Image 1 (cartoon, rainbow, N blue to C red):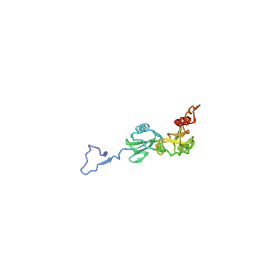
Image 2: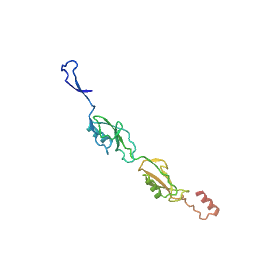
Image 3: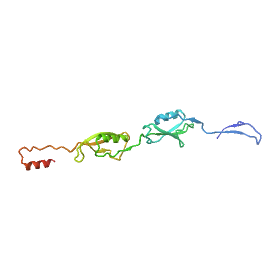
Length: 190
């Protein structure tokens, strides 16, 4: 668009004279403030103060940027621009935090300490629970919750169920019973 002309409007010139015009170069380029370490609302305020508009899109996983903090900001395919046209819309991309991780398979030969180390190696915590088992020796892992290969939020806690050994049963009173009655009574309890 023409933003100025010379001579000015209303001036009379001979036919064939030259009129000089100045065309707009578009909106002036303005410095985009650094938005690193900001959340979407904080960045929107900083951009508004610098005469920009903003649009916050859904969060994306990023293993290095904390959840809620901007992962990046973009304008027309350029990531983290330092200059942009006055009034431009800057797209804000917040981080959803670290990608979820699959729960590793924990062998039933592992102790709780070994399971805890395996979970810690992939960024998961461990909490111990106990249950009786007739097949897994006391002190060894029965299962995990979530189960192996199920994705869990990074840093979350996995429950590791450890065997306390076979269940106990109450011994019946066999005083003055015959051997046959005692055996039958014990079989009913087991």
